[in-house]
Length: 173
Image (tube, rainbow, N blue to C red; front, side, top):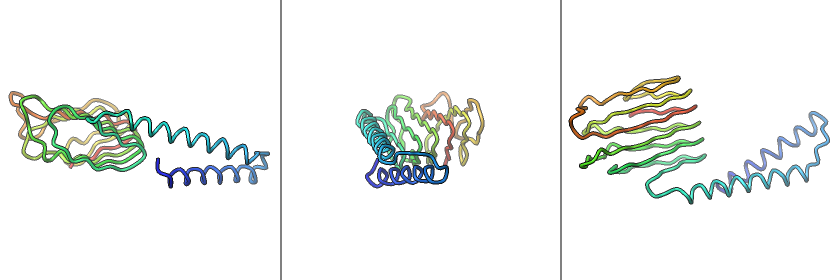
């Protein structure tokens, strides 16, 4: 969480406290209320920083922000978007001897994924109150859905993309 985001959330909470106090005539001790809001926001900040420090180099996490990723997928890679937005470019992916796997998780956010034109891929969507649309599979609601590229052959090497979407959206390009 950036300093500007921290200050903005603190001012929003202070404003809500003043609205509650003067609109509903609630005896809300503002110094104690603002101290509590400050402590909660500092705790959230440290939690987000700790979660970002614990992630490994193969994982790409997006929390409350926007990020762009353009990588050559070789082994297994994981992308997670939580309350944020991300662009994931897989268009330059090359195949190796093993089956490369990409896991994309979206919760309360949105991801835009650029699919490779030159290599075959298989997409497995697990959706819970979300949707996927665009040039890939278009699914929404609840359930597991699978689809393949036009050049997909199960007897040849291909890219596996697993997408988990909960209360969010994923756009295939």
